[in-house]
Image (cartoon, rainbow, N blue to C red; front, side, top):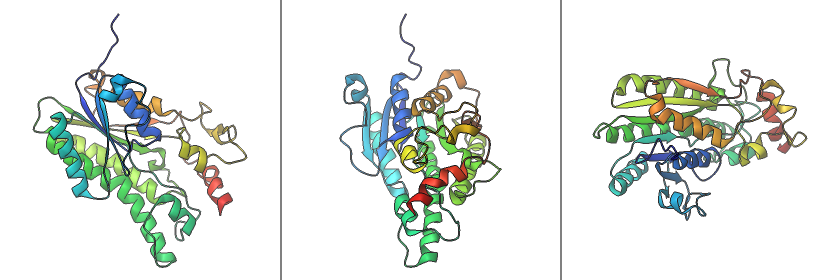
Length: 290
């Protein structure tokens, strides 16, 4: 029996493919037959993890894009269209932050780990930290979606946009992740609004992730005295984190012909995580560093 390749011939852009969830998403799209163009802040020789698979290497590319610059996004998408002729799928994956003990006073170490611009004093540093979180987790994905849809509306077929959100956007609130949670809540709402505006030329959906196993998750979330997460995952019914490949398979489903009437929705991919239960535990690694 021939292997099922639901996305054969499709061209996909995935943001944030230097590591972690983005790589898992890109690999599953490649497995499903798509051509995948990833992007990162720094130049890489190839998309991570494709070097030993000649077919994946031929159907993938890794490019640089500063997602804080809308002109860089425009140039990136234009380059993809020039080289591949179209864009069928966009996965807005890039983003993230780190927790901070007090929303009103962000420590310099937390600012450095997040990568936000430096501030001249405590207040400016705090303001720039939160502005950076909202920019990278809401504004930049909106810019990318708008630019890609301007291409999709000129093509045949129906495009698919998938935004990667977080359980931190839950209405229950997200202490220690206030600006990040607000941005992800906005991304959930943006998803619904864009779906209503852009149908039938494109479908727009969202995945709200719970804890997911990445190197950053291991380094900055799991406490050093609980490296396997046995205590950390007590309030996750499945008692574990998700895997990047599991997120990738959910993306493939939303972009495949199996989900053509799913539009404007946010699906929680979190193992049934109870809202708000992990923030104090997730902060421990940062407080230990401080």
